[in-house]
Length: 86
Image 1 (cartoon, rainbow, N blue to C red):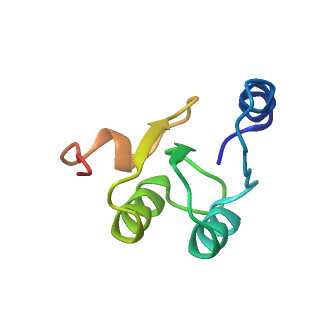
Image 2 (image 1 turned 90 degrees about the horizontal axis):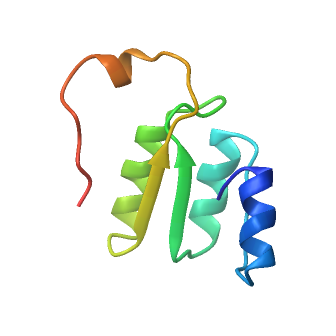
């Protein structure tokens, strides 16, 4: 699940892409479908990107995840330990 520009690029390369415009929508979709890869922003609209990753890893432990952030500031990113999801 990724943003519009990345989504278009992935489709051009022949991948099937599912996009979500918010954290709540992403969580709902992740509960309804299976995925090979999750690409998400850590700072997502109306949600918690790290929490989304944790829920996804419980449901799909073998799936790879690419998490990034385009900016902004969050206490979750600047305070506390760095988490590795395995």
